[in-house]
Length: 497
Image 1 (cartoon, rainbow, N blue to C red):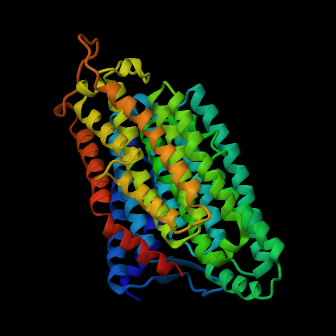
Image 2: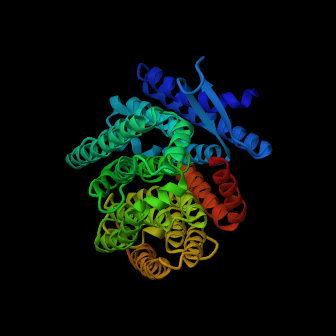
Image 3: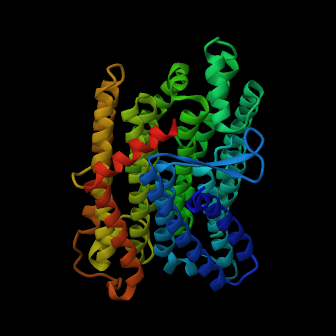
């Protein structure tokens, strides 16, 4: 086995032990370890991605001495390694973008804990991406939940504590459903490794045995992960969690945590149950309806918000609806569109949250629209970043969001039964996105005669400006180099099978 095949396991273990070690260190040491770990993960994941791209196949890494079906496995292909690299880059930029506000938002003696939680969160995300064992996935789901809850409530005020409690209650409900589903699958198949479960399910599906318990298991795991990823109508915890946590936490929660659960659901569709059985179960029709509803109601809620952070948070409900709507179409083209939108949303939503904090900083700390008037002039790089993110979410050409919406429209045209509702809702959602995002862009670029707030130049915030510039580059890369990214996603899905 080539040495590169060790990199996924090394990445997970490095972050896990990094979090443990950082818990006994001071703030600066924990920060340095966190930055080094993320950079290492990016390098290792990118190297593994290039390796899978060159070999054209995935590989399995056996943890310990015991092979399947008793041992634990990691499976890495082109899609997993690309997603791990992308997640690492977004996490690093999100942390750097919110660095200047962290000391204002978190008590000094708890900042080291913030980096510990990020180490554990990254470890769990990598494990969800790479693991080939269903119970291991459940263990890291819980680690992910606890770390995310900590990131919400580390900024201790009434709203964040309430948001963290609500998030924990909803997440535990989802976790309970996932655990019940895993128990049912283990009872039916006698296996916990994903590939072994799929082999057994394929064999028993020909005889139409265990149809009801298998359908129940599929429903439980879909609903459980839908709750944890804030699919409408299970999104009640999301606005406060994203709106009142630290800016880095909001960027990470919206762009990475929910996407880790969604990526695990994609793995379950392909590697555990089988995409054909998923289509036959009709569960995707429910996800389809919830996805369409989320696209509309998430946008309507965002339109009514007067708080810029909560508006961005409600927008996430709509964007997650896009992803599940793609699942509901049940075709390969739609799945590619959903995966591409995971990338689009991760890059764009982080950009919006990071840009928004720059706008509020030159508006007296206020997050209300009235105070934000002219803030795009007072903090030019934040205004540019927010404008780029907004245009991407609306779906203008050359931006990442445009490619996502084109892919969803193409997928709808290949499904005659669901084509009309998808195209109608896609059009309505785009109009609603334009109303609340472009309204905000117009507001921040509306000139004011006199301002009580001092402007911030790029020279005074070099790191922040650098982060915004990189987010913009990523957005244009997804928009202008989409053909190559789509090819990688397509090849990665073929390796899934």
